[in-house]
Image 1 (cartoon, helix red, strand yellow):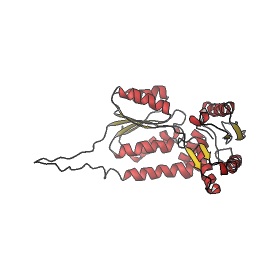
Image 2: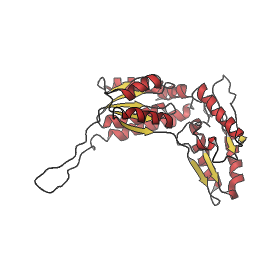
Image 3: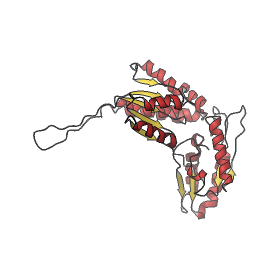
Amino acid sequence: AEALAALETYDTGKPFGDARKVDLPMSVQTLHYYAGWPSKLRGETVPVRGPFLTYTLREPIGVIGQIVPWNFPLFMAVMKLAPALAAGNTVVLKPAEQTPLTALYLGNLLNEAGFPPGVVNIVSGFGGEAGEALINHPDVDKVAFTGSTRTGQHIMRQAAGTLKRVSLELGGKSPHIIFGDADLKSAMRAIGAAIFYNQGEVCIAGSRLFVEKPLYEQALEAASQSAARMKVGDPFAEDTRIGALVSEQHWKRVDEYVKLGVSEGARVVAGGGPAEVAGGGYFYQPTVLAGVRNDMRVAQEEIFGP
């Protein structure tokens, strides 16, 4: 467990405590849950008129191509593998090119557990090469993808050529809404975690906050104070709340969005730029933008950062 958590932190930059206390337990719970499904996947007998026996039969789809993202590499790999295997399928799993380590380690564990050769195949590589091969290969019967909406649209178009089944879990831009009669202290405690957890690199992060006018100024002050208190630093330090972003490219992308928001008329009330951490790395300050309008790109597009 410690080795998997450490690999997850080395790969992603997320705090080691989060990987150990959240990612690993969720992965184990997922495996336990789907381990109970093989005995429950039954067909149905359907009563019909006449001397007929009518029933449904559930069969494995076949070969499942699975492409997982870099924000929760281990958990998302397990979320893809477990249900597919429980239903009797074989799998070709491609981890994100930025974060392949835990998937490869998991593959070794499956070999040690005695999985038959060829049931689980883990192929690391870039999306434009390994990912495209999975999407277009005629022997792959289904593609399951978690990642950006743009890539999901591309996969849907490509899969149509071979009539593959497709499951997509794509990006989001979730809002929080605080009404004037809310318990602001409780609301902000939950919202702070929902916005900044995992450096904001979560597709369901509640990254937009709408507050009814009577509580607006108080909520803004609470949000800025919460962001300022969050420790940004070494992911292996126990008191670190915000670790590193996954890559230099993504770090620059997040910073560009903050600058874009300011250019569109928003104002920075907390954070607003890269964080200085001993030893270097792609760290970014927890940031709060105020005065954001719904027509701004920062309100409409997924930033995927803190």
